[in-house]
Amino acid sequence: AQSVTQLDSQVPVFEEAPVELRCNYSSSVSVYLFWYVQYPNQGLQLLLKYLSGSTLVKGINGFEAEFNKSQTSFHLRKPSVHISDTAEYFCAVSEEETGFQKLVFGTGTRLLVSP
Amino acid sequence: DTEVTQTPKHLVMGMTNKKSLKCEQHMGHRAMYWYKQKAKKPPELMFVYSYEKLSINESVPSRFSPECPNSSLLNLHLHALQPEDSALYLCASSSSGTGVYEQYFGPGTRLTVT
Image (tube, rainbow over all chains, first blue to last red):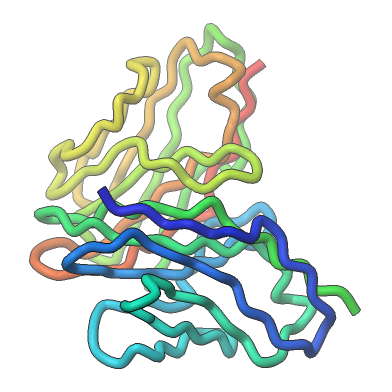
């Protein structure tokens, strides 16, 4: 079975500083990776996804992630964060089934942006 | 329209009550999902419906009963719940068939069992 590890439970950062949220996955033949964001008292919103092709993936709100097969990583980055980026970030891997996808989430990283 | 709606937003119920959570999407998705999320934890998959048929039941207690009456609707019927069932219940939907598709999540129903 696939699995995802997010080693950092919380990442504090100052506004306008760069940030990297780490995600490592278990090795598999086919890897489909996602980053979701959850703002307080809301559902999950997709930031970006890697299915195949270019290893640098750009997403919404200025976020990007790089798929690194040799290091089995899919770290999320933003060059300059805003207060509004304060949220919980989940990395997830998809197990492809017939007719649907089974998402396996990491434990999440809380990004805390302060002025 | 890329929205998944869930009602109610909040629900407080006693352990002897019967209630239902409702989820709706109009994106033509044929896969729908129920997740349970406890505070400060990731979502945990409960059920998956594909083409209105139950495809996955992640060993969920029978006091949770899912139903998919048509391709746009997904219900979760609740009966004789325990306080530890208090959580945020998230619904999601996705395209189905060959390929990998993103899941679209609703805002959730926050359930409190007293």
